[in-house]
Length: 214
Image (cartoon, rainbow, N blue to C red; front, side, top):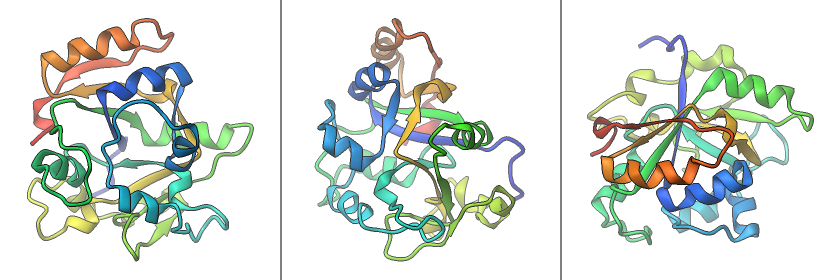
């Protein structure tokens, strides 16, 4: 599969995290989120989060995976599957996928924003799961073809799980203004999301997308 013309990136959060995201005007990386003791439900694997705080990004000396806000290149991620199953020993969250929302942004717009940022935000992408003990990292959009896009978009990923989990990583924080769409599992969750973003100057499209869930 060739590189999509306009690749999108996806971050999943519990719906009760949206209020702090809108208030702060951004998503924080795990390292900063832990320092700030963010409110809302944590849905991640605690052991993997701790490991990511130590994993280096070779193309950016001194920068670690946990210093970056992570995104996948497709919805319906492996992580969402684990949340839906709710039986992973290291996963503290047991509330299922119903209240998880997808935040969608455009990859190229994000890179342009990062490179124009006054602080010069660093970014990278990986060819597989950035929480694993080994992964390859790239820092040039001309290398996007090295991602296994067939695996990324696979519905049956049992034989390509690591490559499906390729990630885009952006240093420290990701502005709320770049979120183009919020996808939810049901009208019930949409009714929770709309009041949370109502007072924001930036209000992304909110859509019910059951096909993005398990």
